[in-house]
Structures are given as C-alpha cells and as structure tokens.
Image 1 (cartoon, rainbow, N blue to C red):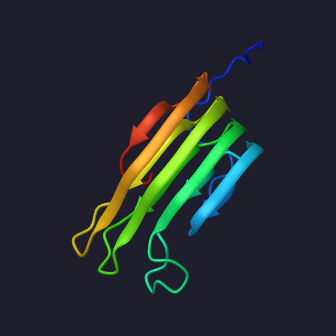
Image 2: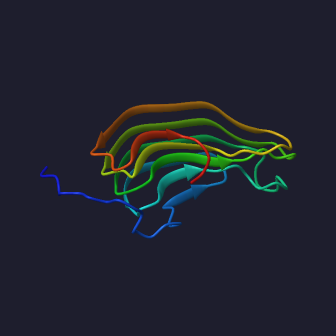
Image 3: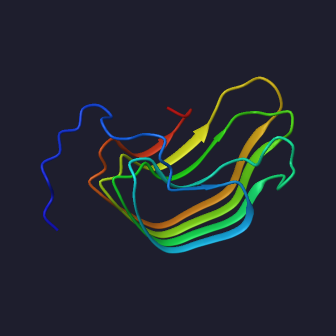
Length: 141
C-alpha cells in the first residue's frame, strides 16, 4: 500500500458523523468497511430513564476495516445519578487506515452519580499511519 503525503494540521473534515452509535445490549457488528471521519463503532451509555437498557453491554465488533475514522471508541461516559455504564465490550480483528484516533475511550468529568467503563477487550488491532493518536483516553474532545 502506497501511503499518501498527509499534512493535516487541524480538523478540516466533517465531524459528528458517527458510523455506528450503540445504546443497547447483546449486539454484534461483523465484517464492515467504514469511512466517516468520526467514530467508527461507539458504544454509549443507555438513556437516563433506562427505558431500553440499563447499561450498554455485551457488544462485539469484529472483522472491521475503517479508513479516516476516529476509530473504535467508547463513550462519552459522564457520571449520572442513573448509573451510566458501558461493559463487556470486545473489539477484535480491526484494521484502521489513517485513523485520526485509533482507540478512543471517553470518560467525561462530573460530580453527581457514577460513570463506569469496565471489562473492555481490544484484540488484534492494526493501525496504519495514525494521524493524531493511536490510543487516547480522556474527555470527549
């Protein structure tokens, strides 16, 4: 694969274009190709009312090829009096070409309640030429 000459200094691409947002339990995403300039696959905490789920959990994303994405993300997870959580997530067999961020985990600050991210496995992840950071753990930017 021939690499292009990249000189991106600031985000000049469309943001807030997540490919797959997941507020759910017991979900599998398999054999996908994604190009979108934002999160490729991103589990997020369920709604505060808990109507559809209490915790985003038991999520599998595998055999995914992404290009120019913000990668395989989690969150954002701010504290909530309704218990925000993401757990039991497996992301495996992932190839990322020119990820803006490859693995992006987004805990957000707050003072009321809790926000939990637990039992997460990233396995067999390949990144070709990360643009910003291969791994970023910190508040949503």
